Structure formats: C-alpha cells, structure tokens
Image (cartoon, rainbow, N blue to C red; front, side):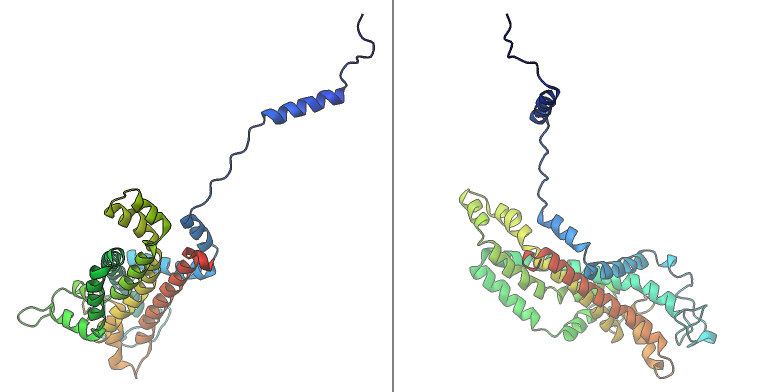
Length: 319
C-alpha cells in the first residue's frame, strides 16, 4: 500500500526545478577580449576634439593635393595682365596676383607640392632617424658614441646654410638649377632627422632594459629578434609623435626656402613660390600674400595639434 504521506509535486516546485535545470544548462557568456594599446589609443583619439579638428583639416588638404581640380576649376597657369591685382570677388575668391593669375587656383594646386614634399621628406627623415637611433640605443658603447657625435655634428650645421649648400649642388656646369623638387627633398631630409634620431636612441635605450627584453635574451633570442621584435615596436611611439609634428615644420621649411628663392621655383607651384612672388607688390595689394601664407600657417598648426593628440593617446601616463 502506498505511503499516504507522499504527495505529488506542486506546480510551483515543478517550475523551480525547470528553472534550475535551465540555469544549469545555460551557456556561459564569453568574456570580451581585452583591447590592445593601439585599439585603446584609436578609441581615445576619435573622442578628442583636439584630434578631430586638425584631422579634418588635414583630410581636406590631402584631398586638395590629390584632386585639385575638384576644388578649383580655373587654370592655375592661365595669367592675364588685365586682371593684375584684382581684389577677391565671386569669380575669383582669392583675387588675382600681379601677373593676373587666379590666387585661389594656384593656392589649391600648390597644396599638392607642399604636402608631397612635406610627407616624403618626413618619411625619409624618420627612416634615417629610426635606423641610426635604434642601432645607437640598442648597441650602446662605442657604436652609440660614434653615432651620437655624428648627430651632434650635423645638428651644428645652420639649416639655411646647409640647405643652400645642398641646393646649389643641384646645378649643372652652366649654373642652371637641376633636380627641382628632388633637390629640396634631399636638403630637408638630410637636415631634418637629427632630433628624431635622438628621441629614438633614448627610447631604445630605455626599452632594451625592460624585463620582457631581458627574459627574451635569457631564452636565447637572437640580436635581430631582440631589436626588431621586442625593442623597435615598443620604442616607436615617440618617433611617430615627433614625425607628425615635424611634418608641419618641414612644410614650413619648404615654404621658407622657396620664399628665399633657393627652393622650388617656377613653373612648379607651391605656397612658398607664391609668397615669394607676392613680395614685390605687397604695398599695392596684400591678398596674394595672405592666402598662401594663411594656408601654410593653418597646415603647420594642424599637424602640431595632431601630434599633440597622438602623443596624449599613445602615452598611457597621459590618459
């Protein structure tokens, strides 16, 4: 005879048992993967006005350099003396220069030369700085002493004197300039890498003393693996920041050389060439000088602000 005290399960107890069973079989959510330092930096950058504003300006400048005809329909080489020094108007937003050339069209087309020279010279300088700075910082001792003394010697050369000497070497036997943009690129690259090399050297020296580098060395890692796998990736941040800031400075240096008449010259259009050509009539009309000079100033400021934003994002101590 069945036990009279034994009762059937209530609906409440059945529901509780079902919920417990469901909890036991529910899949465990996977933990989100931790973000890398670069991902954190990018996430931080896109939230910073200090990055977005100069970044937007630089994107517009790059678009002008790549597709100038989208921004200016006038021919920058078409000049008519009858329009000489006409003021800005609806037909010519920036007016005309002393030769009757459209200042707006020349400013837009000059962006390509100035940005190209700045980017290529900065890349060349950064590459030289990376090689010498990494080797000096990693090996130290007599290698560091030789490279450091070489950097000091090159840094002791005044920029304008060194640039004039280099640019004058790009002449043929009759004294005519040869090389054009390549001469300016060579001068800016040769004279623009020393500060970046010093930063790379000091960062490499600090990085090679890190625990993970010491552990890799004790495990038998080769010199090349230590240098390029462990030291270089972790020593690049200061170089990237300084190269970003230097890009604006190099663009300004190109404009200075062209303004002094020793850099890029006609028929190539650049902001420095335009500034140089506007000086002769500056008392009569100021707008042929103001617009290219304004573009130089805005570009330099944008790259400096961008470099500051990148530095703040990549340096964990500043975030």
